[in-house]
Length: 273
Image (cartoon, rainbow, N blue to C red; front, side, top):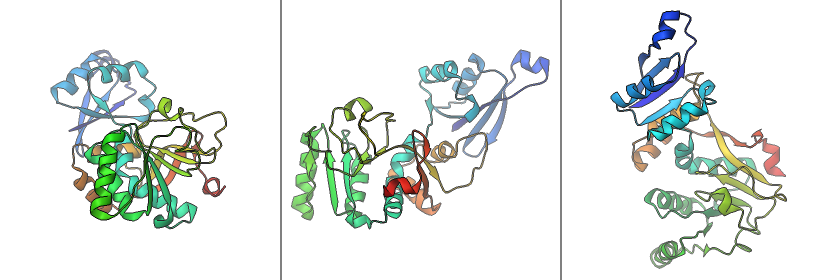
């Protein structure tokens, strides 16, 4: 189950004093309303075997409590897991705003982790885009992957890791798992569009004048104003397989309505520049 946590302004002095937790059933989990975050809530989450939580928007500034939750090995959902599963929708959105056919869009993928989920999405991109490049520090495994793909399907996927040349002229960069520190080691096209999936990247370089994307908005109505829509929807896919998640996203007709950078929603005119 998922825990949905929200603080409340309790007017009753006695309830504030005993810090009573109100527990309500909430779709695929439980909602915990509490006047004050403390060990009592942590004990309740442990008792209920809650491993993943969504925290109300207004409570995210409580850094001390968030750090305590993280130290207890409880995962705080932030929408990044869902972001990876929305890679096909991201490319669909870019195709639309850039007015480019997906097949003609050159994509450069930054990826180190040779995992099944990453390979699934790389294969999905290969099935819809003619021009795919992979930049990785895990050259050996991805070279074997590329060679096998060429032998079996006659599909050529360049595997690169030249820090001065690999990204110097690339326009659309899908950064699956490079950190900000790793990314800064590369010479990057100053007008590129960079989509950061797993890691938030706040700064590329002093000369970078392109688009740096770290977040997204979905085309679904907010079901609960207290919580972030991305995190609520992410809570529906936790624990599901790649196939189940893709089926749910397709069934629910989930689309990207906006991509978000450091300064907020990126206007469509920015892409066309």
